[in-house]
Image (tube, rainbow, N blue to C red):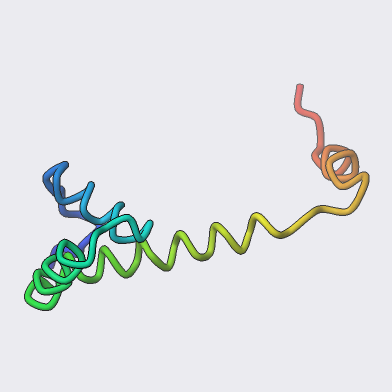
Length: 81
Protein backbone atom coordinates (compact mmCIF):
# COMPACT_ATOMS: atom_id res chain seq x y z
CA UNK A 1 0.00 0.00 0.00
CA UNK A 2 1.20 3.45 -0.93
CA UNK A 3 1.48 5.94 1.91
CA UNK A 4 1.00 9.70 1.72
CA UNK A 5 4.75 10.31 1.36
CA UNK A 6 4.98 8.13 -1.76
CA UNK A 7 2.25 10.01 -3.57
CA UNK A 8 2.80 13.07 -5.75
CA UNK A 9 0.34 15.91 -5.39
CA UNK A 10 -0.52 18.68 -7.82
CA UNK A 11 1.43 21.90 -7.08
CA UNK A 12 -1.85 23.69 -6.29
CA UNK A 13 -2.62 21.13 -3.57
CA UNK A 14 0.90 21.55 -2.21
CA UNK A 15 0.37 25.32 -2.05
CA UNK A 16 -2.91 24.78 -0.18
CA UNK A 17 -1.08 22.59 2.33
CA UNK A 18 1.65 25.21 2.79
CA UNK A 19 -0.92 27.97 3.29
CA UNK A 20 -2.84 25.73 5.71
CA UNK A 21 0.27 24.94 7.75
CA UNK A 22 1.36 28.60 7.78
CA UNK A 23 -2.17 29.79 8.76
CA UNK A 24 -2.30 31.99 5.66
CA UNK A 25 -5.81 31.07 4.52
CA UNK A 26 -8.94 33.14 4.80
CA UNK A 27 -11.73 31.66 6.90
CA UNK A 28 -13.81 30.48 3.92
CA UNK A 29 -10.79 29.00 2.16
CA UNK A 30 -9.70 27.27 5.39
CA UNK A 31 -13.16 25.81 6.02
CA UNK A 32 -13.33 24.54 2.45
CA UNK A 33 -9.88 22.97 2.64
CA UNK A 34 -10.70 21.35 5.99
CA UNK A 35 -13.82 19.88 4.38
CA UNK A 36 -11.60 18.32 1.70
CA UNK A 37 -9.32 16.97 4.45
CA UNK A 38 -12.30 15.26 6.09
CA UNK A 39 -12.82 13.14 2.98
CA UNK A 40 -9.22 12.46 1.91
CA UNK A 41 -7.30 10.43 4.49
CA UNK A 42 -3.93 10.65 2.71
CA UNK A 43 -4.15 14.39 2.15
CA UNK A 44 -5.24 14.92 5.77
CA UNK A 45 -2.30 12.83 7.00
CA UNK A 46 0.09 14.83 4.81
CA UNK A 47 -1.30 18.18 6.01
CA UNK A 48 -1.14 17.18 9.68
CA UNK A 49 2.32 15.71 9.22
CA UNK A 50 3.52 18.96 7.62
CA UNK A 51 2.01 20.94 10.49
CA UNK A 52 3.77 18.70 13.02
CA UNK A 53 7.04 18.93 11.11
CA UNK A 54 6.90 22.70 11.09
CA UNK A 55 6.29 22.73 14.84
CA UNK A 56 9.29 20.45 15.42
CA UNK A 57 11.55 22.63 13.26
CA UNK A 58 10.46 25.71 15.22
CA UNK A 59 11.30 23.92 18.47
CA UNK A 60 14.74 22.93 17.14
CA UNK A 61 15.55 26.56 16.37
CA UNK A 62 15.46 27.23 20.10
CA UNK A 63 18.34 24.82 20.82
CA UNK A 64 21.79 26.32 21.08
CA UNK A 65 24.98 24.30 21.28
CA UNK A 66 27.44 25.06 24.04
CA UNK A 67 30.48 27.09 23.15
CA UNK A 68 33.18 24.96 21.53
CA UNK A 69 30.73 22.28 20.37
CA UNK A 70 31.80 22.39 16.73
CA UNK A 71 35.48 22.20 17.69
CA UNK A 72 34.85 19.16 19.93
CA UNK A 73 32.74 17.53 17.23
CA UNK A 74 35.40 17.98 14.56
CA UNK A 75 38.05 16.61 16.94
CA UNK A 76 35.98 13.46 17.49
CA UNK A 77 35.78 12.65 13.78
CA UNK A 78 38.77 10.62 12.63
CA UNK A 79 40.60 11.94 9.60
CA UNK A 80 40.68 9.66 6.57
CA UNK A 81 43.56 9.42 4.11
